[in-house]
Image (cartoon, rainbow, N blue to C red):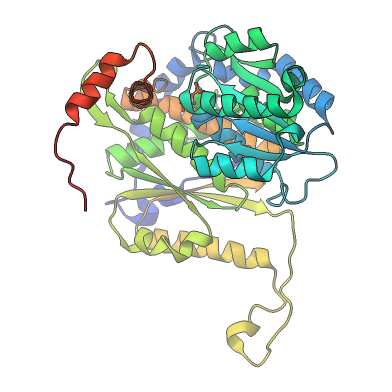
Length: 463
Ligand code: PA5
């Protein structure tokens, strides 16, 4: 099977000059710390970083496949109710590995898939207006089993289901993915008798895409989940190598760290030259932002660190953001996602032979234009001394996407070592959740509510 490849040529001073580019010496100097960082992450595989082992959870994969087969043909829709790490991977996999027109015209007996990762009433309300819960399977996903957004959606749809199909039958329309023991959702599963899957210990939300969190909805819409985990396992094997320049996850982490710390590029742009891979950029944005964006380091000191992830799509964003990227401030570095082989061949017919402005396109392939635009952007960035690397996918399939997911998860875990932060907590997210509980009047959060009210007595300034 083909590997995905990391081409870091254009992050080097040889290509873009020494002011913005990395020297071979800078990379070599990171070899020892990088090897130590890798070792300390991999040493936690059997302990608290159980997500490293997800590619080998054969029984879980078999369980998911058996469940997907048992409900095949029964539902027209699958709806994921979840948020953050309990939704972004689902969307990324669906858009990468299903047709962009899947929901308009689902193949065979496969259901449509909707990921409702917001409590905006206009999103949820529109779904209710357009679709029938009686034809729908709801996958409620929450690792903690108590997230307000997910729980509110769950009770809305549970109520609709009970009204539509009755208390007894509604049970077959809900499948829950949550912790094995902890959380209100697990208690509800036990009480109501819902079918459930487990988010294992040591698998945090943003590292859970290769667990039932991401794999169940994928299997339900016909995605090759075995290919995904085999790709991840292959990347895991490649990434055992402590040599910085032979290990894609380690090398990518080193580029991110050096370009931020030494070359002061705080913004990390994932520029997907593949429409199907575009939501991998959103998935990675959460992975990077929540893992590394931290107030305190491991010693408890205030450090306020973290790169800012940005996501762009080629060629679409060439006509909106590339001007800034090529000529704006030198505060960014770029990761182009590129695909060698498209699944479709679209030919450009000969047309308007007398008009050179169109005629040059005739007789070529759309993929030639797509690749020329990608290469054009890469050249423009490089000539403007903007560090950029390319992650090359041989093609977009489950195996290559699985490789990418694992590479980025491991890379971010290693970055936690470089930045000396806990990559696996999210106190900032918890702070927002607690404030929302207080504002919603949840029992036990009265004093937080009083604090918020006391702090908001100033005169509002609103135009
Ligand atoms: O990565 C994380 O831990 C978060 O983004 C969570 O996934 C998100 O807050 C949802 O949490 P939960 O799955 O517990 O509902």
